[in-house]
Amino acid sequence: MTEPNVNPEQPGAREADRLGPRPLARPAVDPAQAAVFGRPQGVDGAFDKLYTPQQANGVNLAPPAPESLAEAFRRPPGAEGVLLERPREATGDAPDAEPPLWTGTRDPWRDPGAAAVLSGPAMPAEDDEKPVKRPPGALLSLPEVLFGRRVQPKALVLLGVVALLVGAAGGFVGWWVGDTGTELTGSATISEAEAGKERPAGSVADIAKRVAPAVVSLEVFKPGAESGEQGSGVMIDPQGYVLTNEHVIASAAADPGVKVTAVFIDGTRTEAKLVGADQKTDLAVVKVNVTNPTVLQVGKSADLQVGDTVMAIGSPLALQNSVTAGIVSALNRPITAGGDNGAPPVTYEAIQTDAAINHGNSGGALVDSTGALVGINSSIRSAGADGGSIGIGFAIPSDYAIKIAKSLIKDGKVQHADIGINASSTVAGSSTMGAQVKNVAPGGPAANAGIKEGDVITKIGNRLVRDSAELTVAVRAHDVGEVVPVSLARDGASFVVDVTLASD
Image (cartoon, rainbow, N blue to C red; front, side, top):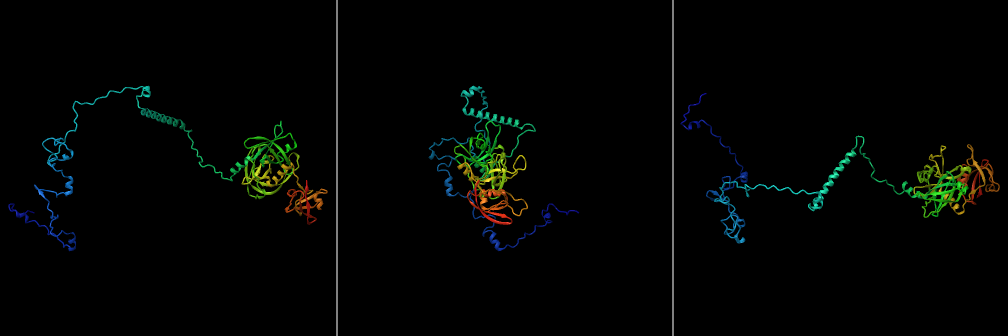
């Protein structure tokens, strides 16, 4: 394709071959939008030309400042020729008192076209000026430092603190190295309880603390003998009366040469004198000469119920002031315990408990959950020859024991009610359960009431009699001279006779 032959001397030849620009598309303008966004009437350009700035030498000048600003920032009258010059009227200085801030023929503050130049340092150093090396200070000895007053006290104190810190750090490192030990040794982390043990009022610990000082250990021995006997006792009166079992002090009652020593919880030892003993109820009273002793309060054993919490306090196996706890297993339990050293058996009505009772607890206190005395520990049932506790122990009720103790303190002896017969328990298979009369004392209470041998006593007063032991405790529960109804069984017939009890 060849280009068209165009004469370059004709300027319009090339332009004639080009297309012109498209015509501008000018859409119609909404009159409402034009009224809002259009130029004001009479303004054609992009800027408002209603204000025409002043011009000087071809430079647009700013509009004049407000009169208030001009008055605040303009030069004072008479100081139009000097920039930042203080009013002479205020200072009173001479016209040439202050030198100008610059030198030379040109003033950079007044000439906008002046070039920017770097000036030299404000205080140029002289070429021959060199830093001066200070001579070393004098070396001070320790006495001069401490006593020569050549070092400030604050510096000495700071030096001492630093020395202490360094020593402490070294000691700690040495301790740590020594305490680390070998791979088999080291420090143990023991978990310890932080909270204290709670012992509220009425707890076993609280009761034991209050009751233990009133329970004493009784040592019965004969001077010169290698060994003796030991039991327990209960302080029941501020005058020094101690209630215990008769079998604990039986040897002292039989032999005036046998001594009884009372040992208190604080280790105090004092001699105890025998006041009286009753073998049939296994109770005795001794007296000690002490001042202001701790006395145990006496409760009512008749208020006990099976399941009530009780505590036994005494000296089992010579272990003084031992405390065990349990419950009441049974009430009104007639038991017969074998007498010691050939003495006749002892029959009494007992409180049965599972609190651990062993040899040496005899004569000690059985207390309830308030710490009141409800029984005197007396005997146990044992399955072996050693006589250890198997959880069946017996105590004489406090109501009966205190009654006997008062008689012993008053008269030195006790009178018991007696019916005047010997009886045995009925054999198994008998038609009637009770105590069968074996013999009747002539002229005794039973004989006078018409009771004969072979009769079976089934009831004394309101209490059932199921064996000979219950007959004994039922009769002793009444007073001497009291008239009681006795239920009998004879030849298949039942009848009741009145018996006036006598003294044994």
